Image (cartoon, rainbow, N blue to C red):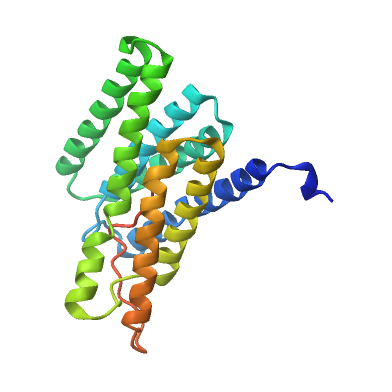
Length: 228
């Protein structure tokens, strides 16, 4: 009876928010790995920087739409991912390449926000153009595992994939696709239906190429941490 007082949108919104924030927290595993090693050798800061940028842009999109679900989850995502970036940076031995990466990310965010806030003709135009940019960024994030999929076909083994991470990718993308359908927003639907399809393809690989008994040796240097 308690659930009956909530709409389908409220329920999907709550589940998607919880799942996505939990998914953002998977980056803690990489930070623990950095702590154990004492350095960032063999790891990349790019996934954290990319996800921070995506979260900030999706947050601005949510503000334009006054969609509290998008606002809450991406505000949390931007904060969490920024902490990962800061942790990675402080433990990196070679900081010069990181400076270029951070400068590029800052320029993208700054230029986008200047356009949205001051140069766009009206709110609808700003919303449309920002939605396109957010969709493009989300598709790039969802496409990150394609390199791993190619490796699976090359080796005929799923040792380079993490089953829990692949399953989480699929579930989170599916939840946001459903939310996009409910709120009638193509910018939320399109990247997440692609992400769901990619998730199905990844999970199918575990059926095609069952794992050996030895522990997986997947590469956590490029996690697919994404904003919705």
